[in-house]
Image 1 (cartoon, rainbow, N blue to C red):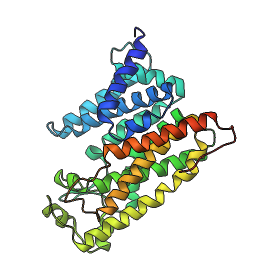
Image 2 (cartoon, rainbow, N blue to C red; image 1 turned 180 degrees about the horizontal axis):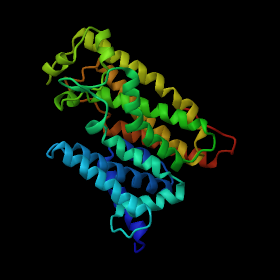
Image 3 (cartoon, helix red, strand yellow; image 1 turned 180 degrees about the vertical axis):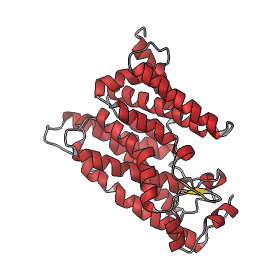
Length: 309
């Protein structure tokens, strides 16, 4: 492989294969050129996220490094010479699929929200209302969806709101899965209003870290947030038919994995402090196999055909 752009894409795909535990399975159901572009976006965001999450460095230094990463990208996007394979691949993907610089900037800014965002400075960083949390989820997850659908392909602008809502569902699922790990890092994304509604306090979560059973009030709180996630997953039913046929299977795989994760959290009775819930590799491979079959079916189906979940 001698083409530097192809080499850059290969480097990004290696990053995605190593790091994107859920996303990479969906990437495999995409046509090669779209998979390469999504991997470039993922590698770009992954590095920004790693810079922001490096707790071995002071907050100010992490912010500085994140800003430097964004500035380096701006120079590369403007045509400056770069040896960074992520920038080389992303620049090609941006031009090929018409991804705005604003959206790519928002990807990086989303990774910095835990350092700069409007979280309430209690003993643990959290959000006052679900509307506040929604804005956070939009920045860290919905923006990713808005970038991805530009690669997937769509013509109906209604796809954008549906992609936004799908991103909210994904991030709420992540929040439920990661309650324990986030608490250990001094963060909690469950809104203060929801805690008060269930007669809970931030301090209770902060003082009860580690392996433990949930209190009934905590279980009711997590069940309520899971219900919100399920409502936002309904957006996928409208989004799938709006996405280009050659990308619908990839979106289906990703949603199926995340929905299965939410289901496993529910099946574990929300005992997220006792263990970290995940979807076993075997189940992901089964979902991927179904997605690949769907991709083949869509490829040879009549043009008017669409698919559901």
